[in-house]
Image 1 (cartoon, helix red, strand yellow):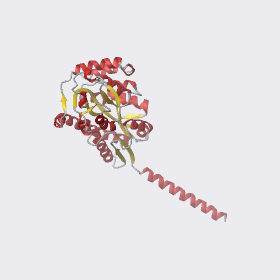
Image 2: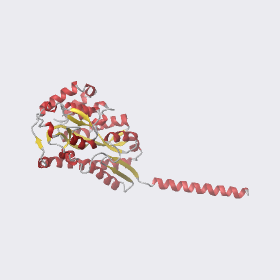
Image 3: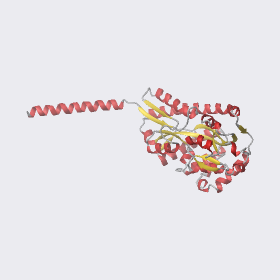
Image 4: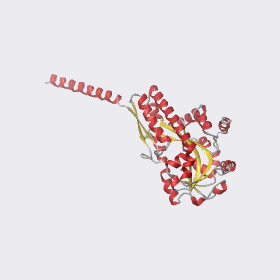
Length: 339
């Protein structure tokens, strides 16, 4: 009897080991999944770039890495997804300097108006040596890793009919200008002469329609894709921010990848960045005709110098809590790269 019991125990142990081994092999053969979340809407270049990233990574990895794309705020609000990627409840999101400046204060200078003089200036800074330093500072502070900077477009003012034509910062006095909720974004609203009014992106259309806000600023492609032209009247070509958005991954997730997997991810990021940047530039080159055709008034000659002077004074006085943390030596280095 003891011999039979002993044999039975051996058999059970062997079966358990075989089952455990089979499960381990099965688990290791499963594709690595990356959940990528964004509030951006269909038609936005950086929304479509998510799919480019997905297809390229899945192709390069032979299907051993998979990307699940969630756009239009399907998972989180814009504020919510920023916290989620730090917590690791989502793997990737788009973030940017103003969202991160709350935690890495000097980054607010990159979202300040008139920091960059154009697309080439912006991309050479962020996708070069300076960008590497900036992104590493984010890794060490927040446990998330920006992988690149995509061109989001050049931000312009977009206002409801009630506001009337705007050509100087004085014309923006009292205007309820929608901003995201972070301190850097609020400082930007002040720097444009408006009354910053925090509001989630997915509420902006209705906010403009009801008068809860009287203006917003975004790249023109976003204005088109989000249909803001249906509820506004003016576009003012202030060219105040050459904007970027950063595909960013949770650092623990990143470190779980092999060196080969990291190479595949970066190759996919490079391809999707090239796609995004070109599409935004192509769209901007002819988009004003669309808005004019929709009955909007485009103010092409605002006093940009007046806006720039007003903004500098605003950052130095009204938003001292923001500018006091700027790395002025790095700022000067960035400015020198525009020459």
